[in-house]
Image (tube, rainbow, N blue to C red):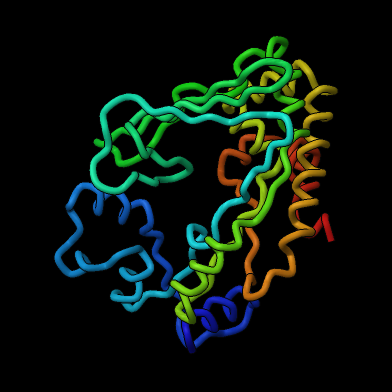
Length: 262
């Protein structure tokens, strides 16, 4: 079996020729390549897929299909950098890239005010951390957040997807990322603590935001569900959703899952 056949067979509940071996080394590769600390055996590899191929591993990658790309109609998005300068090629780790420094500051300008967000890359950990979330004050920023969500349409970066498919070939398959659930989106906007408080204190307004996000998510799904050679779709949630009761999961997560959409 090829890596692609092996992974798809396992996902379909069939028996592959062996268990797929799909280590997630993307951030490891980026950090070590940036630091000049890649092991000698893979120092000539240009990307994580080449490392996996050299290891004889299969490729199951959410980093080679791209992420949903936002289009704003009336909002404006700017990015500035500060902190220590980065060396070599721009750092691209986790959910952020650092082209001009280790502090990435973003701003969304809406007709109802501006929202700001800060990532900080910490070299000792090889990872970025959010030091400032977008949504910090419910009353002062709710209208701006609502407008931003409603103003944004999402598209597939077909060039990135095409390049990823060419890179992976038959050694595996990309994981195509959809938008997260509304609950996860609230975490990105406000952080887990404030998101929890906002849901508890302002249930009607948060449900209205969730409905906007769900509509945008399903519109994006309709655009990408039939893409050629895309077999795996991912709703980009993770373990932080497990903090919540089944009732909140049903209200803020389930509506954006493909099973529900179908």
